[in-house]
Image (cartoon, rainbow, N blue to C red; front, side):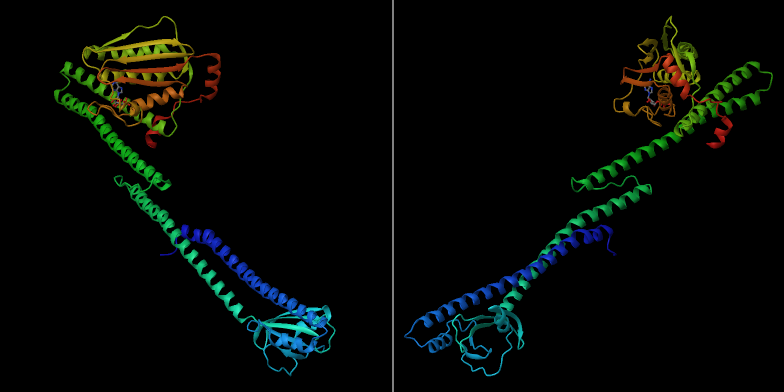
Length: 490
Ligand code: ADP
């Protein structure tokens, strides 16, 4: 598998930086350790030179001693022979005697001696005869042609070996650190990359329509949160899917009922002939009523679709709210009487002027009253009140019917949601009603106690000079949207 992007990014960023730091450290350490070792060797040799020179001085001041043979003795019996070689040099750079005991006849390559001749003391470190050596030369303060200078030479081979083993050790530690970093990081990266891959796969399944899959939340971290969010999303999608299916089935059902009635009566009428006036009248009545129901349902669906696409428009005008409410109540009086439900409505004396779309607001009242009646029982009471409260007009429609379950209450205003699936209805009425109230700058609230009844409160801003200006500016010259066009569109 090709290296994934997170791993690669980690490699470039963190790992690259760690590697660079380690390499830099290694280089600095190597040079540092080498110069530390070399300078301590040089110091040791300088101390030896000072010591030997002090012996020379002592013998030169001692009148009873033979200076040259004493010096010879010092060189021959040099105590640090095993570590370094001590040479006595004459003024030409010839080796007079060395602590190693060998006779040196040829002229040696001694850059440190040349330097000492110029500066009084000399230092050299480098390769002589294939060997890394360090040498220092110090001119003697005692004026003597034969013992003109002393020189210390030591091989650095052993020291170099020690330095190399230290560098190797440090390199091994560095490699171990890198190994550890790689292991722990790859564990860490896998703990991100692997669950992320699973999240991706699950999201793919959800995208293909399998809403039952769920992610297992392994850790309480950002990835865990992501799992929660995806699970929640899947849950919501599946609810929406179910709502949509329920909606389609209830709408089809709603459409079928009036169609069946219309078809039945049309067949009856065509069979009974023109003579039967009573049947004709009754049949026509049903057909007209059911057709109205159908068209109002289609209107509701169209409104809903306009609302969804943001094309629901209002024709704002100064209007009397009570006139529309009164109309709506009147519309339901007959049906309420048939269902033995009483509607109690005392119209206030004063006008309540609001700025709004009277057809839409009547539609809201009709919708709420329709619900109230739909969920009321025989002998139920629906009370309708309207009043001014401060800057607002408040209409309250309360019933003592079924009520709404507390768990349904928050969802009741959302589209497609039907709390009671046994009653007819598409589940979009309240969603549209609320949208209309909101567009008027008002609100629609539902309160309900399950088994006791439901209270719907509609609040709309009163028509004042200010709201008039503000809302009139916002309202669009509607020119009633072309229904044919809407039908073609949807
Ligand atoms: P529907 O067309 O199904 O009535 P609504 O959006 O108007 O759609 O209402 C959604 C749901 O709210 C209804 O299915 C019902 O469960 C509940 N509901 C609305 N009004 C009332 C009421 N007055 N009493 C009891 N339940 C109600």
